[in-house]
Image (cartoon, rainbow, N blue to C red; front, side, top):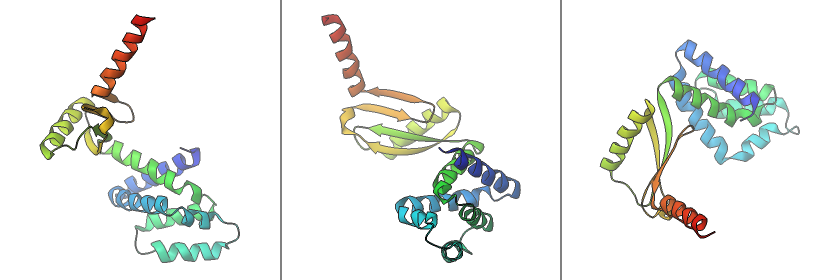
Amino acid sequence: MEKAAIEYGDGLFELAEEEGAAEQIYEESRAMRRILLENPSYISLLNSRALPKEEKEEMLARCFQGRVHPYLYNFVRLMNDRGYCAFLTGSFARYEERYLDANGYVKVRVYTAKALSDGEKSRIEQALSKKTGKKPLAEYNVDPSLVGGIRVETDELLLENSVKRHLKELRAHLSVAIT
């Protein structure tokens, strides 16, 4: 993540916390980030030197004014004014990191060979909560290459107990034994 994205994301988070708007801005900035990632041409347009600042300001007003928290709208305007629109998605990602950390959440990616039942997901989330000391926000993915078992990833943790990993370890042990 770029230094500017981190600094601006931190600044937005600190302001939102001070003003009691952290949750609303979290929800709205996640939605804006998703929209911007799905429409990279919008960021390209805002970064274009061919488009006058006034037109960019009008575009932002049409899209966001009155639809998002005023602090978030003003943040986007500030980024545009400074020519930092390329850092918007990174700033929103940093804001999300800070918000989740401050509220005791951890993002978790869970990979299994087959889809899990709600009960299995619940047990996994309880175990992850105990392991991390935080409330997991789990994203579940099916990866048939695991053959069986599970792989769990966070930014700081990797847990894997899959048939694929065991086969890989067995292959490594056998190749050492043969040579």
